[in-house]
Amino acid sequence: MSNIKEHEINKQDDLFIKGYYAPDNVINPAIAWANTLELRGGATMNSATGEVENWDGQTHAYKECIENDITWPTLNVPEMNYMLEWVQFAIENYMDAYPMLREGGAFKMDPGFNYQVYPKGHAYNGWHAERGGIESTKRMLVWMMYLNECEDGGETAFLYQKYKMKPEKGLLLLWPSDFTHTHRGMPSHKTEKQIFTGWFSYVDKGDRLCWD
Image (cartoon, rainbow, N blue to C red; front, top):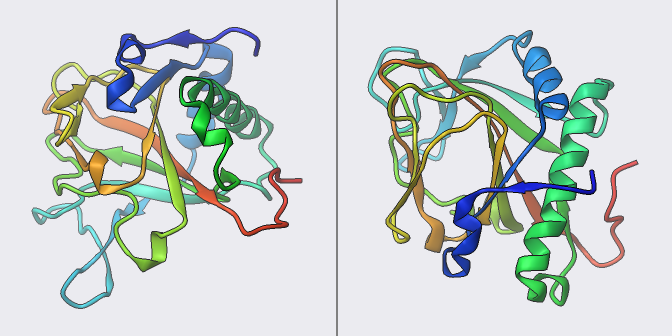
């Protein structure tokens, strides 16, 4: 894992969004395993009621996907563990770009992440940030990996950066979790879109920084 291919966005330090390409031997086995999972309607919290709601597959909604929530430290799937190790390797490159990240509080990859599938014509429609409430206050960075390319659309749109990232198979994105990086997904009307997405969060003093 000594070399890493970077996206052209990495030349723009002021966006705080970085992209890195996972090689085929990392991403292909992970995709094959993800495609065996059972999926349910994507979950979002109703801001009015505070209740978690799952997309019914038809109604226009804030988030229109089917997904599987994965807890990985206990996951006995070598191809997934290898991919997640690669993500943690990529975060070192992100910190090289922004060295002050090494001076603040300690953080590590969250134990849970999502595999999400967006059917043709559907997307994560609502503008949102990944640290948007008390339940997500420890989130520090977001990671998201595209698992396929879209024939049309499918971009991740960043509101304040005025930037749209085109999906590319194996492209890992990293960005801060706060409102500064409010974003949403754009629909592809010709291609089903698939992603992995998760977070790096601050840990309490004395916590282990690595998962056993």
